[in-house]
Structures are given as structure tokens and as C-alpha cells.
Image (tube, rainbow, N blue to C red):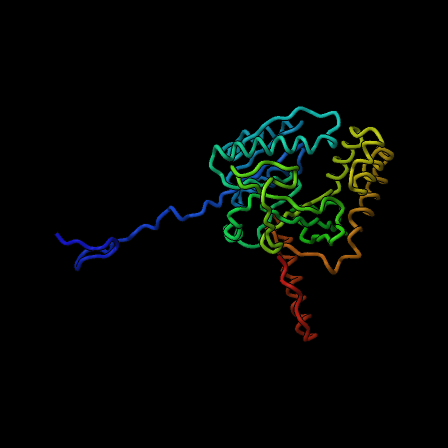
Length: 327
């Protein structure tokens, strides 16, 4: 009998294919955990994460029976695990505690399923990959247990702007300007090696992904209807001025006060939003980041392409350097 090294062939024999060893393959699967209450266009939000390649979604549902019904149906019932939370008397004040609770729950679920990474995100946020996720996660040092992803803030063009039309985003400087909400990013935890540490981090060694590789698109108070629902709810449940002083964002505090004072005057509410949200970013128009994310509608994509062509032609005619490539 002829013997030969594995993978070699004798004369006249068919080629032998040697399968690659699975031992060296890195598991790059990731899951997302979120808390949701009366979400906006939630099925499209879910579809985004399915298209992104999310392995599983863990969703804590608050006061939203229609969401529970949606998630019980195909195709979501196979990729979503839910928990139900009881209504809170002061939901803003306990939000961090509730978020940590669901993060701990999802970490345990991921460990039992063998999913190596868990992102904590809100239902008004989209995780965006400017590079393939597999390339980014391959750069994470072996001892890092908290993969930090910076956040950018959606800039609306009108009252109806949402995650299917918004492509411009504000990037905070060292003081946070011009961001209206949080500036410290979100994170993914390495399952089995960390625990939750507030809504923005997991414990252990941190490693920050480059902004061009990954970022969180935060659609804060977009569209207008979502701002109105959110802060009307907070106005009704955040009852004391002492509690207001604990809120770190002026935009949130002033939004709550506006919804308290003008609850019966829709025109005043809308005027506040247009001034404090829509027009807030005008001074920074030249420094906004353009992101061609996969949630954009076809119309929005075509508009961006026309704009890109105009800018390229203009740059050539002026013999100047073209604008930086958007994410």
C-alpha cells in the first residue's frame, strides 16, 4: 500500500482537499441587549440589526404589549429573547439600575448560548460598522474585556427626520459640544470575562474601536414626535425640582420643563424642539459627519450620491482637495 503525507495525492488519484482546522477560527458573533418602551418604527429597528449580522437580541419590554406581540411572531421569535419589566413610578431616576439589571441578564444568556460579545444599546440607537466587524474584533487585545464604541448624534433636517433619512451626525469635542445627550459612547462586553458597569461600560480592560471602524448612531429626540412622547412621559413622572437637578443634560431638563408648562400647546412644544434640537447644530454644519448607514431609505441614499457627485465636481473645478470620505 502506498503511503503519502495528508493532502498529497498519488498519480492517477483524485485531488485531496484538506479542510482547514476549525481550532484557529475566532468566534466573532455578537448580541445586543436593550430596554424599550413604546419604541419608534421598531420592526425596522429589528430588521436593521438582523441585516447587520446580530446573532441574538435580548429585549426588556416596558409598558408595550404591542411589542411583545410583534416579538412573539416569526421571524423575531427565533432571534429575540424578551423579558417584561414592571412600570416605574420615576422611570428616569431608576433607568441606570434597570439597564444594569437587563445587561446582567443578557450576559448570562449569552454565556449559556456561547455568544462571545454583548453590546448594550438603546432603542433610538443604531450600531454602525464602517469596516467589517470581523476585522475590528480581530484587533481587540486578548486581555481587553470592554470594547468601547464612540457615539455620534443625529442631526434632523425637519420634524419628520428619523433613522431612515438622517445621514448627518454631530461628533462631540473634548467638552462634549455640540452633543445634547451623552458623549461617552457605548460598549460591548466580552462574555464570561466581565460584568455590567453602568449603561455605557463593562468591567475590565477597555479598548476603543476607531471611529471609522465602528460607532453608535444616536437619534436623540428624532423625529419630533418621539421627543414629544419621551419628555411628556418624563414630565409626568419626574415630579420634583430636586430630581431635575440630578439630570446631567440641560436639553433634557429644559425639555421636561417645556412639556410641563406647555402640555396643552402643541405649537409651543414644536417651537422648542425646532430651536433646541433642529437648529442647534447650525453653527457646526461644516464639521458634521456624513454616514451612509444601511437604515437609510433609497431616496436618502440617492440624495447623498447626488450630493457627493456635486461636491466632487466642485472640488475638481476649484483644483482643491476633495472633502474627506464619509463613513
